[in-house]
Image: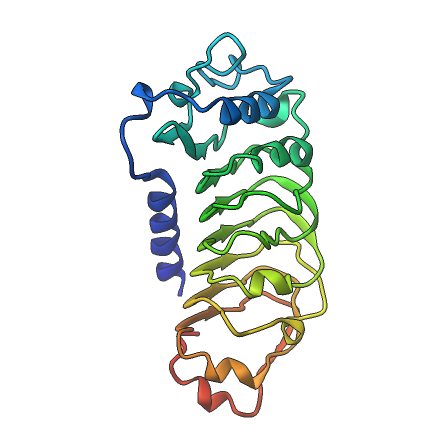
Length: 244
């Protein structure tokens, strides 16, 4: 299980950094996207964070550090491990401004020590989200208006509550929850569109698992290790296809 986890995390990072489209440096930045990025970076010491190009003095946002564009629209943003918490950026409020990017498909803000509540809306085109190793609080990100979300990594935050029911409806292929999750337990979630690999280790999940898990033919890997109390249904044999 641990070997699979490491390999899968490598694949997640690889997917996150790969974006289809032409060279971003040669593309004209959409004015709406430029405004959203400038609003996000307001108050940042971009030089200290190694963010070349960021700021009102350069309108070619497709050439900025961490920004990838397709046909002039921002489709990916990789600002991982930029020490953004040392700036005057306030996590949740600033991230909400990135939700205004209508074509953003991949977002990596991992390892920045950002704090605050994660925005409840926006990000209509998002597919891959990595906000691990921050200090976000409040409810788990739900992305109710993002039907194409496939990867969600929120490890190592301080989110509270149960596994969000609206997130359970999304066609996720991988969900990794944070290390301080608490809540009602898996029995309160909608199971119709669970992913093929579900990694929920190192949380504080409690309660029984619905027998419906045995009918999820696409679910092949389920990791619930290091939780508080997980009770399997008596029909556990029906989960023979799972790698536990």
